Image (cartoon, rainbow, N blue to C red; front, side, top):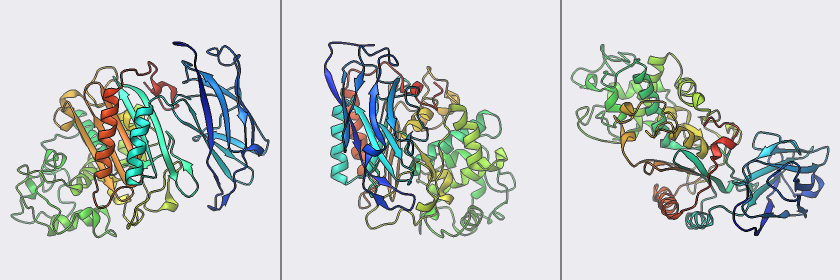
Length: 465
């Protein structure tokens, strides 16, 4: 499909660098491994003629007509027998595999000596105003890399990575890059609780502790006069349990304790500061307890229930709980950077239900279109259930902030939603980066009047839309 007059645009494949498994860096030598790149008319009916790339040592360029439908192009390339080419985790086949070139796409050329060259592919930026706005924020706060996904009317209309997943190897962020999402894990836990309630496995009014509670006395008998027996599931969802983060946030202390040991310690030794249900006080610990409720009611581990009941039915297969160390990083997980702090010094495993998930921005949008109370994509829980939480608001957002992580998930209105994830934060002002990113994206998407008709969800291997 072609629209408007034909203008010539430049496609540039940037070559970033290469790295061996042992993290040693090898000088790029792309010409040894990728010797030709082209789009053939016979394989791409949208084309009026073949498009042949000019292969140089540091880049490959070609010209393509404006208006070309970029979501389903088949590239033809010649690579040496001892090398392999990947897009994310998939190995495309020359002249056979279609890829989405409407958003930045990264080729990883892997040589027999295990060195890798990363080539970012971009055909004329679709949203240059947003590109500039985000690059300004990245420069201001020294953000190594970030990823953005935008939904309009339940269609994915924009998904793009910026900067580096790994600064040392110059590996770029792409749409399959996994980031820690910190407290954006809480909406995921909330949806799981609502799903259990919808399925009749619990009520939001159910008590949590004591002989009549879901968890009963698993963490020891409730101290007499403590009022813990009054805490409900709804109180935990709304951050109204009565616990506060004094003398510390329980989830950031005693890092060697298990969930069981930590909750028992708090139940037995930290009195409530307020009557349950009376006062809002943001609590990571409350969502840790919700994770244990999910386990008790479902009979599965927290992550197993979320994946089987929430994520997998939506075609979300890459989201998982994060690990503590860089050596344990998941495939496609970015590296985290934090001045004057170590993002790998915390017990991320224990943060599961309040701050432990890894996700791509696109997968967060896949979840969002099924909890947004709009009608094009069926919601996984009913509007009645969603309306019992902040997810029933016309506009809502949740941030995630942690050493090495700045994240936002938002339903801007009935038309837009977006997610943005970055691999650092400003420790002096923990929400400075999230606030700046939110403002930049909101301003630019509300100014934009022309969006692609195609739904990028349908172009992705995980898409179920």
